[in-house]
Length: 197
Image 1 (cartoon, helix red, strand yellow):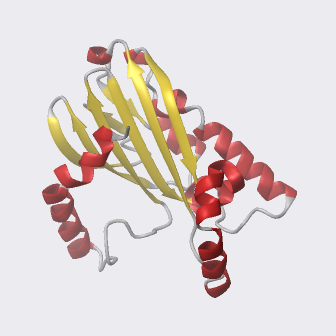
Image 2 (spheres, one colour):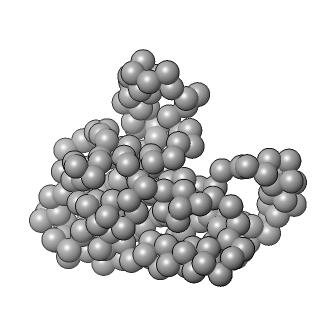
Image 3 (cartoon, one colour):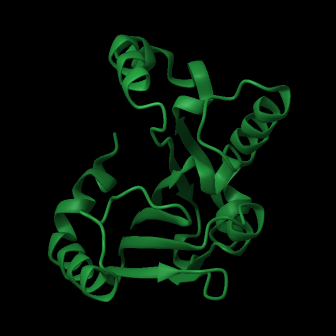
């Protein structure tokens, strides 16, 4: 049922290509816009009527402070605390103004263990093999949220101030948005944490 966000990358292809070119020109950049870069996360946003969908993807380093499997009690506690915070998206994205209710939350990361047990089981052998070959492999955290907003007309912006505050290693978030005013791409930072619809 991710119909809004499934169309997002295709709808924004010209915009993303332009940003990638600009990004590559400005910083002798990475192979693609989706490259794993510490301090940088991506957020896809789709607002259609009273339905709002968000898809956040971030290196685990930005959110938990490390990317290795949590073995110590301190690491396990940090992963559990981060997961609890990500499971409470209304505060992270300041969605109170639109009278939004969380309808779906999906979190995926190798750090969350059996959070996505079926997916993990299907690829268990493949991932074990990869981890043996690439001990320094990067871990990402993906979060998908679906909200129903009773007063979506009052929902003028997302404010990521709280997300930047709770996860200070996140220095910038590349945003792709489809909303009532069309599509746009932007970069949010702790100094500029708001996104207008």
